[in-house]
Image (cartoon, rainbow over all chains, first blue to last red; front, side, top):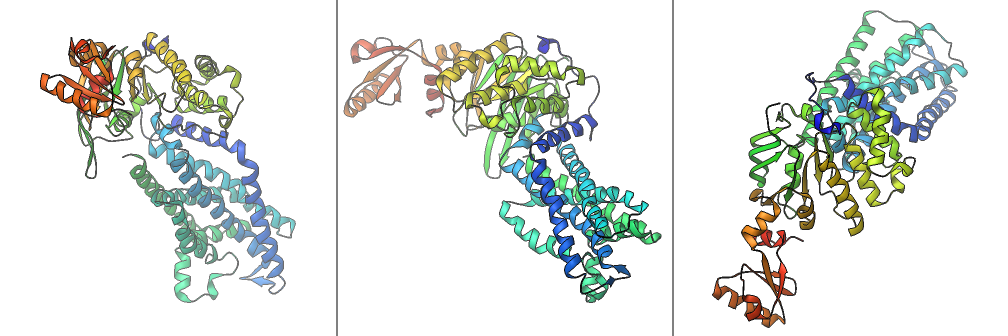
Length: 267
Length: 298
């Protein structure tokens, strides 16, 4: 058997190797094939319900918000919330379940894969999904009167970048969690306020100043703005700032997720 | 590669807070041999196994696996070894074949060889018929065989088996022994942790007996038995009062004894059989273990 003669690989293995990232993503893709229906269902139906409820509910009270038709305003805003929901939540729950119940990471880390590669690959896979899911509410909004534009073609990329950030942030939360119950604190204490104070359903301008300041620190706000500007026309330097903020958020969360996952997985 | 050992540990220490799980362990697994790590629960076996994949980082000591120093070159070593964990970590919603496909990727089996690797390991683990079954539907023995198949996809030179037959019924255990024995005869180096004495006696060229994180004896099973327990033991059955009497008598004569449930075993005491009306039996590793550590293996 070749087991005896198999020679050590000549090549030195490095950090963040493509075969390791691919290996972890293949695992995700194969698993996804067994639950894509439920996952897609919630990612499509949730934002659609929000869109219809707010679009028709609020839309009957207000016609324009911040210079947009309300359906335009909310249709683009919900892209960002979809990215948050389909990025952060799957990352939190699947990381925790794989760690605590399925012991998946024990198996993966016994293979030539590092924690850094593991976290990066899982977040990349989620970010691809958010890139796709993020477009769904926009397409629904088109059906309800949002005018198509070329800029919409950029939305999957914005959703993927923001989705990567939320995914690694979700992994970071899971790495910090001692029990799955502690997710409640993060959800109610951080994610829900972020979801609301982001200029999604109403503009930040009307809020008290302290809330506006917090809103500007919210990655979701920058995602909302960027999506809106992509669809209705970019506004120059400010949009570069939004991109920079999202990239910075993703980069910091990425390193934090790796650091805390290492702390959890490598004893 | 210059090293003659697949695994070499020297003075390895691992502490978890106030608990010292591994306390200055030396361990050597020569290429092509099967070495058993024997000890009761809590002896430090699993911590040692995890240190070999760098999922536990030692506080002190030197670790070398397949010529690579750990933890820094662990990834290199992991590419060449297979690991069968104690706790099942298969993807339960996937089929047998999908589980193997995923790990063929993780172990970097070249694209053109993946299919052949999956077929080969399905054959080795006798799971060809169950390739399309979901892991959920498999018996405990089949799941363990799948874990072994999964560890063999990349034709590793070294196999780590952490309690490979724990929780399985005796017949299934024997099937797995046959499989492990076959791998060893094909030249795969094996380190196996176990608390089943019989498993270590049957499969291992060498055993390291661990107690409280240390190696208390190292050698081939038969040699350890001969050295520490003698060729035969005398087993005396009787009422609890009778057993206490026998124990004190043995102590007076300087014989070594151990309690074996409802009886007392007297070791290295030729001639005691006639005097005490006991039964002669062949000594085993368990005698050695109890003599050396004072602990019963359950």
